[in-house]
Amino acid sequence: MKKLQLASGLIFPILKPTAIFSIACVGTLAMNSCSEAPEPSSDEHGSHSAATQFPPAKTSRPADAKLYIVSPADGAEVSSPFVVNFGLKGIGVAPAGIYIAEDMPTGHHHLLIDVEKLPDLTLPIAKDDTHIHFGGGQTETTLTLTPGKHTLQLVLGNQTHIPHDPPLTSKKITITVK
Ligand SMILES: [Cu+2]
Image 1: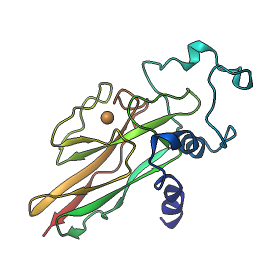
Image 2: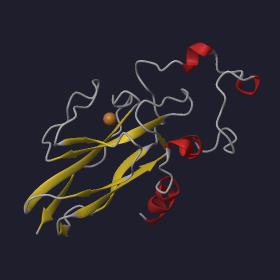
Image 3: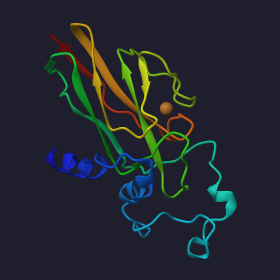
């Protein structure tokens, strides 16, 4: 677990939209130079035609990408309000609306609170009190929940809030709020 947290630590601190390209580099294991934003139409990146830059209907993602809740731990007892840390490995975080390229997949977090059954993961994720979007590229949030048991689960969504193909979801954890 220590290794996972270390890896996610690289992603966590960088939240500003201006930093998304370097985050994407982390997510794709530095396939391109990470020193500056890629220019989609420049000669340097000539392998990307205009067509491949257009967001596809389905966004693929690395097979080994992982989405997980760093904290609280599954089964933890917490006092409200409490912080939830999102963990992501093998794919970058980018704000909603941002699409970089097919070989630089990114997404943003969605936290499902007390959602019993996952929604249709081929459609945009609903936006309501129990499906919270982090379209700014946030990787943590502070929650205030009523005392008792609650479940938390993350789903990564693409630039249009649609889960990737295949979808990236975290384990659903159960916590008890004191
Ligand atoms: Cu979203």
